[in-house]
Image (tube, rainbow, N blue to C red):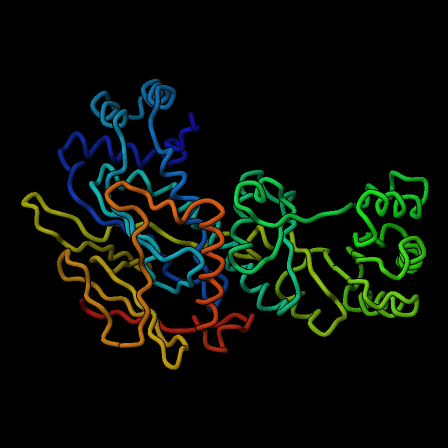
Length: 439
């Protein structure tokens, strides 16, 4: 049996449910919406990631004997609510932006429709997945832009928790990275894996030359040798002497990278190895990548900055009730009026308006009642939402390696629509405005 995901939640989700069971509102039909009020870090766009993971976790959102026993022992809910949870299955509908899609302030990234009992307890799970994965994907997209055509590898597993490492590798691949060092991400999601040796390999051997010879014997001459364990000049010379001019690559993990990379390139060329590739690592972020644009570097490996969202470790999305039925069954838009945290009530549809294939706005249409808002008045607008769960049935096309490949392809297409100002790395307003219109 798969491990239950039902307790990956905050206690107050279940105490609200318990109170709703008591006062008879648990079965009221509701619409919850997941969105971001703003883009963190002054970013110009965000990237949706985690949707496929969320759907898989939703499938295992069940309250088994162990989960029910814990809730009973801790007196989280009463007997009536325990009986409801024992039979819990999400039978509602979830629509949302495709994974890999871009989003902007107010974008209805996920819309969850169902009873209050069904939908409210999904809040923490949905936010924990989409907030982290989207933060990593947004950072990865910015790094991909800064790297240009040079390959990027994700190498951050040792800088985050074990399951976050897998999620980060997945999100990074969707947003433009080409490989990961994480084997579980490769197994689970079909992401290409890479990796050769660390400094420990060189230190294990009596000499650097012994280490290089052993690595080449194991992995072939096309391997990448780490040349900065001791002295970089000697490392380059030893690498070419041992491997010959056909050496696949060298890796630099320290120093003033633009200066060191240029020097290593000169040494490789002088030693007759002009085709040997140079990979650099060492705490890179999008700004460091941009600074290396003119350097003779062939590929990058990024770790800490990527898996921590490059300064914005969460997408800051929220999950809010935007419409509900009253006691008579009439649909009512609802919204918060809190200072600086106000929300827009009502069920929404979202479109990306385009001019000549370039995005011009995020158009959000708001229904007066419950009917789906109608299509855009702009003939070139692109609808942004798709059905992910239809009355409890999960669309499996968004899961697994196939879902990741589709999300990666969709991201490339969506990013191609961005106006040129969106590609800047400095803090700025969103690249396109969010425009609200009545249904």
